[in-house]
Length: 494
Image (cartoon, rainbow, N blue to C red; front, top):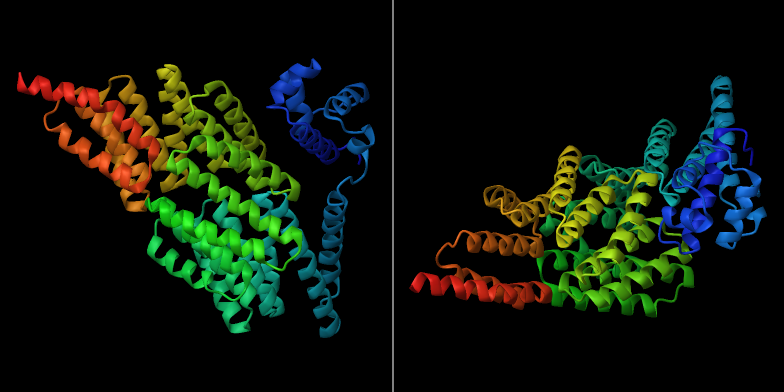
């Protein structure tokens, strides 16, 4: 590792951040306080903008339990050197291909195949490390070369990666187009594994667009596959959509089926563990939807541990966010704030706009519960502006709801009703039943504040819906409103 250049310092920064996270510090500021360094200095080290002095690096090594050599070794994980070598080799092959275009076709084809192999490995490496923009760039180069070489298999695989890249970057239209092309190629080439991979990614894209019927049809098809991987993945996708639509019992049953498929699979432990991580993620989401927050906390903790074992950074980040939400819903505001701050740092360092927006939504809720209403409103409004800029309807929905609640807490009933109605409508369009019900309960609170008549009937309808769906915490929230509902009735009689 050459610390004289920016790339070397950035690599050292990544290792420092990784060591801090593995040592279970709550956040970078918490670590800085522990070792007696300034927060700004720790952030500069992590970003690689300044050179870490040897004595400082020794302190970091001792505080994180890592040997000093781990930070300075050329490649402690066996990935960085390989990635760097692939990039160097790829550049060399690019030059060689340009110089030898006039040579025999067979030689050109050999070089093209080597290029395709390197681009595939480079794209896969970027996906593993969560570098979304870099993954998109290398996948586009891969697709172009596959077309030039007439390699249908490489073209199919590049479309798969492009679909994933565009999905994670929020461009759902491009993602759908790429995945449908991958699906078409997989069917023509009779590649069932690739077909199911494209199908699974497409399910996520359709679900994000609110096209649940189309997504469900694909998920059902996958769930009856004879191959164990698409079978469990299809069941998990069905569960995710059922949870989204408020069909919590069916979601739980499908997750139980998926867990049985994974448990009984005659596959290597690593493959089954990767499937288990996604199961835990969906089980956590289901527990949160049901209002079983202690169970969600335990599941999110298990998810964090399992994701760390296989190095799944996306699910590690998801676990931190879910830990924050679970603490928040349990009223443990200090713990919630700490976990949400960790998620915000992670989102900033990985340029994950989706997580960044969601963190602001839940930070708004945290400040609202503390009574810090101006900050709650500011965060919700910022989240809404960013979500609208991303053209991400699901994030717009969450932000509208948070802003409506913040306005309600400030007794700004007109603004509250405006944002809550927009969130309720959008939730209905996207099939997000729980969020739709949350918006309707908040609108009931607006009606109570205005002393509107006939709120008892609406209260009864919402209570019945919450109970039937299994939203335990929403049922409790409605019960807490019952005295106000009765008081309003008494006022009407007088």
